[in-house]
Length: 235
Image 1 (tube, rainbow, N blue to C red):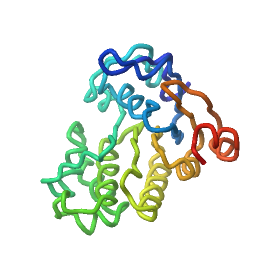
Image 2 (cartoon, rainbow, N blue to C red; image 1 turned 180 degrees about the horizontal axis):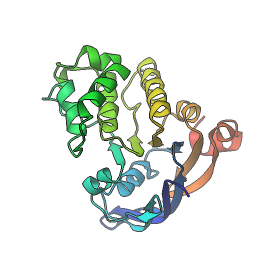
Image 3 (tube, rainbow, N blue to C red; image 1 turned 60 degrees about the vertical axis):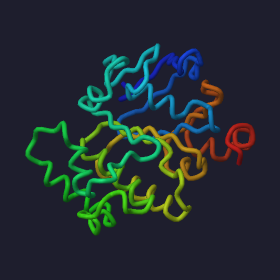
Image 4 (cartoon, one colour; image 1 turned 120 degrees about the vertical axis):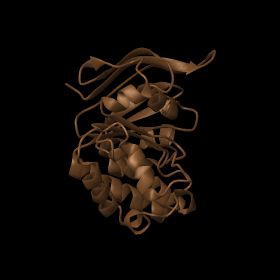
């Protein structure tokens, strides 16, 4: 059984439909990427899965239907969402941003997890008392990811982490992300425009065009499929 199973997902904004019966899955601990041009429906897919917008169809987590649940309810079920634009609370310190990520937790290990993520992302450890809004874009992206991990998610939804970042900074963000997902066994559903980098990172990929899946398979195969590259990935 897959950790996440999405079937026949349809949604949009007002009278404008964006997704037309989209289906995908993510297994436990699996890294899956959704690729496509601007306007293909990638961000909308994550918003629908995380409960940010209403949708029709089916979204199952560990076999249980969760479509229609609020984002906070899904967070409690193990789904964390890092939206496009990072969403850091700029007026708070790095440490306080991380603690916000654990606001639903009632266990006694929050402090230990805080120290673990400050160590896993050394730049954050160096800036733990610094105001988040004063950090670079790459550092804020790392903070957004670490904050999501503070909820101990089973599934991380990650929207365009490379947006606005220099190539070297993007590579560092992805390298850190790979390290922590391997450490925690967290599954990732990633939306990304940097196709080559994302396909290097992921095990499996879906290609989205105009709200529908047009190709899927092992990331390595899609990366070397010239027809897919030219038609959908702009490579």
